[in-house]
Amino acid sequence: MYTSDKNLKTSLQRIMNGLILTAFCAVFGEIYELFGHGVYSDFMIYAFMIPLMFSVIPSVFLLLFGKKEMPDIARHLWNYGVATLTLGCFFQGILEIYGTTNRLSVIYPAIGFGLFAAAISVWIIERVSEKEPA
Image (cartoon, rainbow, N blue to C red):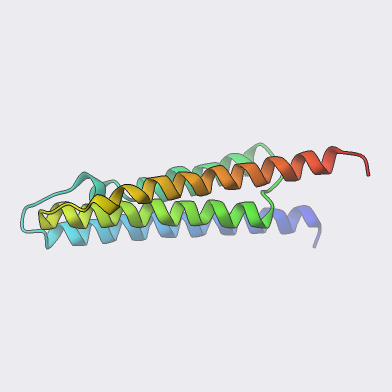
């Protein structure tokens, strides 16, 4: 198996995992809404959009345009950011359906986007260090 075949298989596996996560979030949100006694939350309804926008779509673009994959550390940081934002949406949705608020819910977006910034920084540093002559 050639390296490009392995990269293709890995990319397709990441896309499939992202689609499974997106579908799980959509189904979970719908089931939770059914038991919400007529109370709805936009955070719960649209929580599936986070893994779709930040996991599936970037993976498809990287695959289509033949860009080099993210380094492992950057990819893990990116995935942690996706997980943090998704869980934060579910948490905020549960609080809204329950009819309460929590001042600590603002920490989820801050940490999630901070993890995205860290992943992009690591990716840029890796690319710059690869281009520098040794």
